[in-house]
Length: 411
Image 1 (cartoon, rainbow, N blue to C red):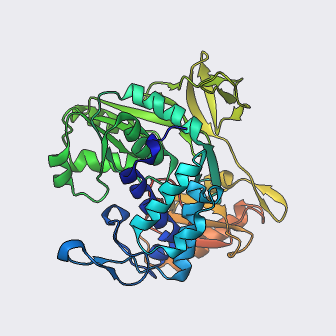
Image 2: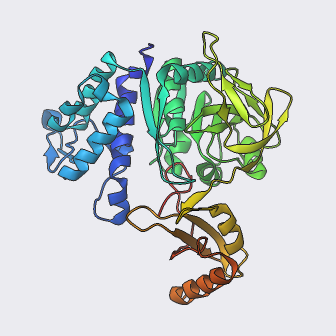
Image 3: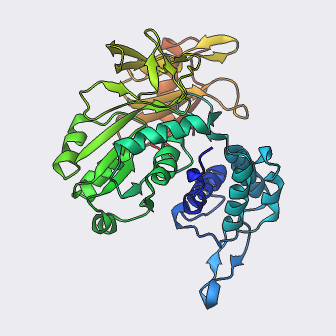
């Protein structure tokens, strides 16, 4: 197995993002205060207290994780890197700093690095663990390295613990032999001064919107975007502002990258290692020529020949409510027709919340009495939906909840 993935600096960044993802729910709830993982240093203590600085430098603040946080973080790190395969996972709880955890991960990878696991975003349901063979991820990174040969640095605006971020900000720079600038917490002015013509900027649509209005000028950089399509006006604006190209990636946590395109009006061209397998599936071809079992596409698509596809719509995915199949997308469509609803997201409650649907509503007008709005929408739902389809919990907010990758998130 290739060892280029085991660069210590890249691994340290990935470990920080994995730890952050394990305790992020407490940060959102306001019960834990953490700086952004891009600002963490390897001598920071994981638990309570401060790590001593070197040569009289100021002490680095600790993350202040309690015992439960540490267990959650250790579990997620073990899960991601499969440290249990090397029998080294128990060493994590005996180590005090982020750097020490990174060293343990690297020792584990020297013994076993055949698989790596990620959590899905949960945009269509409860987040789940997806495990990939490192050999197949290397195959994708090799193809990307061919496409981006000559790029001298990766500028990252995405976390490394999601598959898109892992491939583009851990595997790809290792293949290219270039560094990574973690720009997630950089101001627009600082980033503008940092950008070089040979950079590859890795981001998502919502962040590209910010960059276009704030950074404004991209001196010949190349760009990559994923998670959702770029709007044509945004794509055109980025090119007009100096990007030499921006590649959109189509794929998912379950599949990895499937295809790419260079303009919003184009079809996605399959990566060389994917082949069409009928109207709604593709087949992965390994480097040695072996074919995997067909993989069903997550969307309805139309094909243009054997190597290009256009995405039509997402496949409906049913959830069980009292044993009955219910489609959250249908419920959303009906609720969206209410005159006071601008946007809505519907999903199944978590186990601790119950066993019915819940809804997050963005109102179409300014709301002064949220309870009145809940009652109005609930009454509407009672007349338009079956009892199984009717949400039993309503949350009102200014914008639909999203995660660090800009994908729909739980609330």
